[in-house]
Image (cartoon, rainbow, N blue to C red; front, top):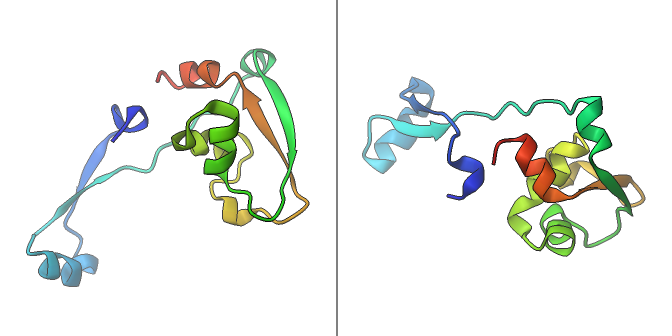
Length: 112
């Protein structure tokens, strides 16, 4: 699914809460990615980054910004993680976010 998921742990879910889903799919369980736990940046890590200020406007989304700043819309999660807003739905017009640079350094922090 991409470099972000290569080392991500998975778990088997057979919780009875999903019985209707399992029955509809004809399975007894599903494999799911575990929710990632992203570590916080240390002061030393932050010093290695620059940040571009962006004022949120109508039509903005993380994927579009990731494409503009990193050349890859799949890196949208970097912007959400850095701003502690995991979904761009949490932003409103006029909010200020930061676009951390260089993205290669951030991916290096994650071991990607």
